Every structure is written in C-alpha cells, then in structure tokens.
Length: 172
Image 1 (cartoon, rainbow, N blue to C red):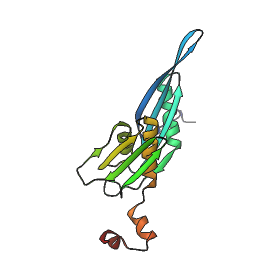
Image 2: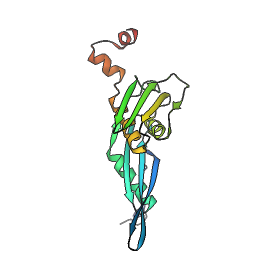
Image 3: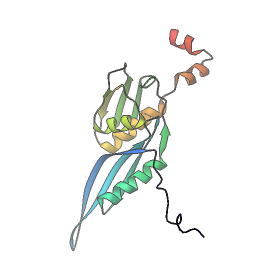
Image 4: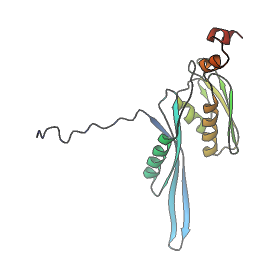
C-alpha cells in the first residue's frame, strides 16, 4: 500500500457564504449563580438565488454559530433574480414582522436595514428598495424577508402561466 496519499484529504469548500445577523446572550439564574448561553441567527446563501436562515443555541458562541449554519443549510429556498433585482414588488409577513420589497434600477444598491440587508446580499440581489414595518425583531424580519422572496415569480413563469411570450408580457 502506498503511504504517501493516506493522510491527504481535500477539505470540502462550501459554496455557501454565511452572515451572522444577531447574537443573543441569555442568562439563566440558578442556585450556583448565572449560567450564560448564546442564541445565534445566521443567513447562508450562494449569491446566485439560494438563501436559508437558521437559529443555533449553545453555551459557547462559536458552537451556537456552527449550529445555526447547519440549521440554515437545511432551510434553503431558491429565489428568482431578474437583471440583478427582483422581478416585481412583493410583501412578506411573519408574526408581527412585515416587509416590502421593490425592484430598483441598476446602480441603486441594496437599500435595506440590518437583518433584511443580510438576507438580500446572501441571495445575490444587487439593486432593491426594502422597507421593514411592524416588528424590528431580527427573527421575524429575516423570516418575513424570506417569505416575501419565496412568493416571487420569475418573468418566464408568469409568461408561461398567462400563455404569453416574454416580449408581450413586457409590452402590456
């Protein structure tokens, strides 16, 4: 047996980028004093139309983030992107968190607040106008943004549903 190639294992590069949205320190008071644990919300995406969010809880920050990344990779959704923006205006809601997403012309950038910005950047949308109303809780804002993104339909899908060509769809 050849011993030169035994220990060479190529590290698997993840195609997903991750972004920490929020980190909470939670204290539990017991007889022996306070016990701290951490809750992390993470958004992962490939910047090509796929995004997911996850929540991880642990006694250690790095362990909570790792759990959140694993959870986010289990909750991936695909989003249609049209010319660097979203195909149409869309509202999303989760709990008390409400969001509004509007397509923007080239060069506008991502006009959005903290939690929404993380989701939109991980999806790969470069030009969008976004507004969060209602709850500012990062849990609800992230889930409401993903709700709005899952409701989006691509122009090709709309044209097929209406039995039109893409040219006729954009004329009318």
